[in-house]
Image 1 (cartoon, rainbow, N blue to C red):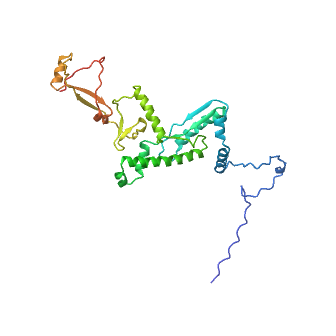
Image 2: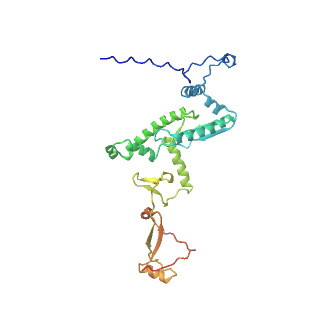
Image 3: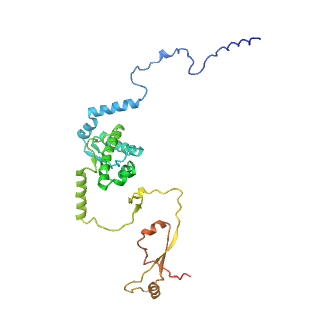
Amino acid sequence: AASPPAAAPPPPKKARKGKDAEAPPSKYKDTVNLPDTAFSQRANATTREPEIQAFWAESGTYAKLSRENPGPSFVLHDGPPYANGPIHMGHALNKILKDFINRYQLLRGRKAVLVPGWDCHGLPIELKVLQSMSASERQASTPLSLRKTAASFAKSTVDSQSAAFQRLGIWADWQKPYLTLNPEYEAAQIAVFGKMFVAGHIYRGKKPVHWSPSSRTALAEAELEYPDNHVSRSCYVLFNVEPAADSSCSAPEVAAAAKDGVLAVSVWTTTPWTLPANRAVAVNERIRYAMVRAT
């Protein structure tokens, strides 16, 4: 059998172009007068930032400026975040903007201090704790045991958030924060509440509030969320009118209809889910109303 033909030799390699090609030495390189420095051309922030922050901490830069500046005092109390988990972009924006203000005041020569704090009570913390429990643990928990677990969780979260804020480079009195679960803070709150009560500013009354059936607690306006595809069905509702006990109605036909139990006030609402909690219907003495018979 005939042997296969010999393989053709490979074509010669072409000269490489682009960044991999070896460029001839430049005749101008040694004629440019550039500074000779060990300063890195790269920021290398992951390494340099902790070094700079460690230098600030060791030299006590913030403490010296905030205590020894010649100008007047400037104290910025931090509106406390919830101690219910790791920090997010909202935390970062909040603290960095406050750090801008604090450093600006320091540069103006004032004794500027940022007092950090944490809100260690409330539903966000309790929900976080409940989510970490099994169904049997939630069933067996008591209000007292839940408070103790929530307090322990809040304290650990304060430590982790404080470390994260310091890593952002925020200057503040991190060793002396205020926590709403500290006994002295709670005592001060009770003292202020007592003064408000004595001054007549505290009273018991009624007001409409938003209620969460799942969390079994009241909700603030900011905590309400509506699905984008929600459709609110409007409806007309009749509220029966009871006759007045003193028979002071100036319109006999209205009084008679009310006495017979056939008089009602018609209302229209776009929030029918509020009807079970409705307590009254408002009327205006300066508006003329019509009494009609429905057939």
